[in-house]
Image 1 (cartoon, rainbow, N blue to C red):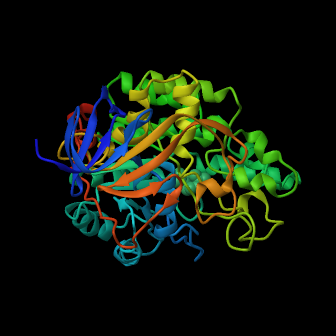
Image 2 (cartoon, rainbow, N blue to C red; image 1 turned 45 degrees about the vertical axis):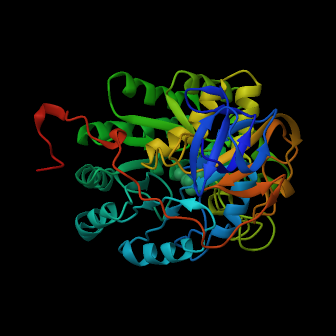
Length: 480
Ligand code: URP
Ligand code: ZN
Ligand code: ZN
């Protein structure tokens, strides 16, 4: 057998379907062999370690410009450091669009920023203004360039689409083979409750959760699914916070509608109660949808086990707590409607999922790999290059110590943000080495990155994004 350049020897290789006791051979940027007793010019001893596909974080906000001119503090360079520290080797962040504008300006700017990325990336394109030009000229060009992942918001003031706009995006996506990922919360309901909370003199961060209870998320999820069914366009529901929302997805899945869903670590280990910490501290935990109650995590794990939810993303957001850019962008006295939403979690995603999932006995190792690597790669059209361990695929691997007990601290996250909402959380299982396209990028927390070495990953049309060919009464309004 030919000698490999690098051999990972003696670990337990885990993929979406298998647990194998074998070596992994790497030459150049690819995996070249899976076998026992491989020889290599460089050999890494992985005894006692799990050898997993590098994580794919399919929902994270990196260096993203916002409508108010602010920018997410995590740059492509710092995001890569944090991702590698946590065992993730591919990210899918978001190119923005601003109302009244076309896509190409902000996209060109974003792709220019992404050129410095040390980590491989695909892209989502946010659609906030689905004008005729955007839908008919720009989206087909984007798809041809390998950007087939669209994100829309059904809430948030500078972003949200009304039902007519959403239907037009779904129709355009159907024509170009794109997948539409949706932030599901009811815009008017949140506005109505928020105004009432402010009138009642309750501006503190804890009111965030009260402004958007589960039913607000559930209604928007049901509506998104119904409109997607009307168009016959597959959709993916972002950041599902509770079992009640997962139930809407499951009901649709049972009748054959092509809808999938994800959740995030914040819904497993944070609660609405965290936003009630004294003073402004609750802002550290503020994200949308809101974290719920402790017992809601069990419902999410059940939805994962029965296959309703099949991805865990971080929804990483780059907002620091101190200073005047992040959470305090609008001042320390800002009411809950004016505090930037989102929590950082790039480096914590895999460890929390492993600890709360595998170690707690809720899921098996294969499901862990599916949730954190294989399914996101498949969903967004970058599999099998990413998300698995097999000859011919990119040599993206993480050596995982399943026994290591770690107390999460902000220093361990290695991100640009000055806090982690998971400070003090104890996890079992931790990444000890990350390999990206054959190069060791993290060794015992020491991360080495090269700006510009990350590749843009074009997304292929996936089976999951193909319409079913079923429209009500046989009339396809999207194609008429
Ligand atoms: O609170 C959140 N999730 N902020 C990030 C933007 C989004 O909604 O995904
Ligand atoms: Zn969202
Ligand atoms: Zn997000």
